[in-house]
Image 1 (cartoon, rainbow, N blue to C red):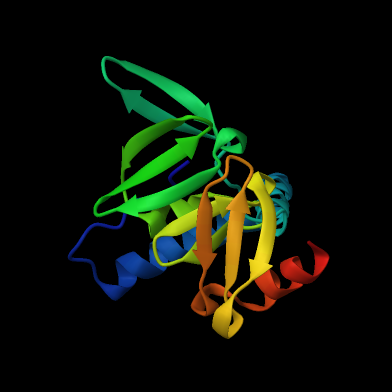
Image 2 (cartoon, rainbow, N blue to C red):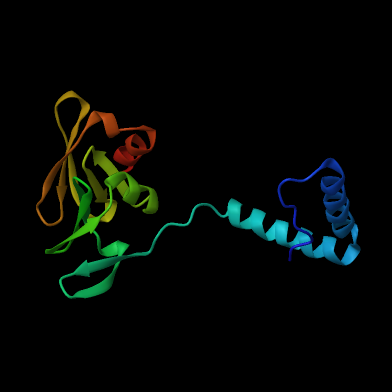
Length: 162
């Protein structure tokens, strides 16, 4: 849907012509309704909030498959990789824990320390520990520490509701 092309180097006259042409296009009634509709649709998408991934592509040996994120119990950092724990299985995925954390829904996955994320649904119990930290016991018996550094307002609210 290009109206014109502005190639370098250009002068003020050429720029004004392109700008006038764009303004004239936007003033036409039929196109302005379409444009308004598109802008409204984009605004609705922005207000709907961030969209988070629903599954991860896992390469395991000579096969690849999609792992639904709701099956993930916890994630731990392993240098330039992350180790995904899902049930009794563990998968290595290239990437950082920070990068994966941005893709996962924060209401479902908590960053509990520098190197671990936990699926809230996998937590069996929380035990207060020293200096405001918590010991997390997962349903599979795994024990993790929730460091004070990662206890923010939302996680504090979570503890009170847990």
